[in-house]
Length: 111
Image (cartoon, rainbow, N blue to C red):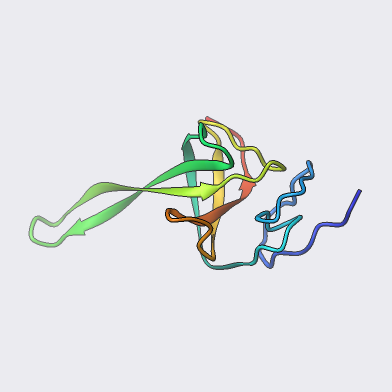
């Protein structure tokens, strides 16, 4: 089995292997910047998954919080192969396409 490279994050390496150049573990893609945890909302596109997560935004005028969500497209390497409903960790990387600027680096258990 070929060696996987260390990506600099505290995440588990995937069990599968792939020959994808845009994979941070088996290719030459470098991750940088921020990481987020979210749920896969859709994985119907080739090598792409739509990941969403919720956060609270404070409204000072009303002294309350409102729930908001963020939806981004992330590269889904074959070695990770996240599916709808999976909890994933995504990391920022260079732009891979017009809308993809994140890559999935770890898959957790689903709901």
